[in-house]
Length: 138
Image (cartoon, helix red, strand yellow):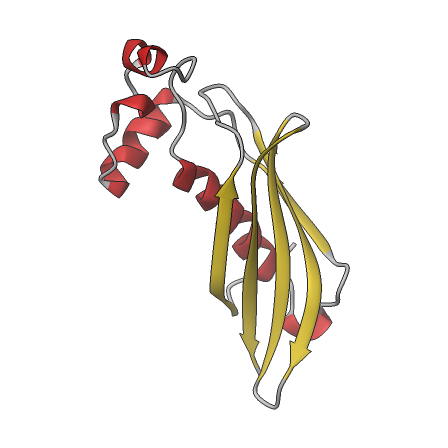
């Protein structure tokens, strides 16, 4: 469901479950981002680095958070801020679930802003936490 800025209220929630992360997705993300660190595609190297295997790019997890946010906010909104802190690795096969909550709504003469809290989980484990601001121009 996409949000109309005029309807947004503190306490509103939104969520997104992504398909399982694939190795192909990690390779494509490496190409798009330019981050070719071997921990994202070379299992023996990632094991040797003490990571227990290949891990997804943190920014890919943040992209899932952004996708949840923009899917909820709709095409008339602008994400004016988004930030995340990564708390646990995401691995191929993991299903990332993102949830968001509107913490505060601010109105001015020209716009409506929603300050949101974001959480990404794999199962019950938090893998990233963050915040974002969405703006609708009126």
